[in-house]
Image (cartoon, rainbow, N blue to C red; front, side):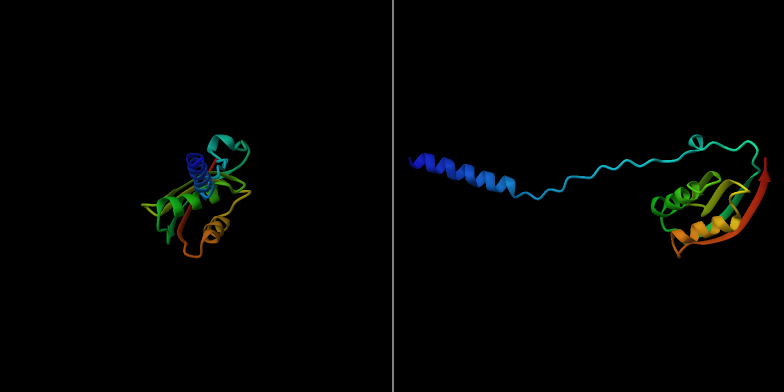
Length: 125
């Protein structure tokens, strides 16, 4: 009788200990990433390439990649690359949909810490 009580007590304690764990399970999110092949380039559009410096970035993943993704999502942008080490952004865009001013505004909207300078554009077809 005593051993049954002990077994039940140990079982109750084990159940109590196991049920009190407050483990958060990781949330799984699927993120769609746009790439050059997913965007269809307009064959009749006039494209330009812009190259400019971005000051104020502090890291490659948090800053440079965030800016790169924001620019790449813009309607009319064919490709975007931001090099953290060189503080340089290179963007190919449709001149009918995107302007250098709009590129600069997009970068500064990500954070007030970012400053765009040395904007150079070259028109291509």
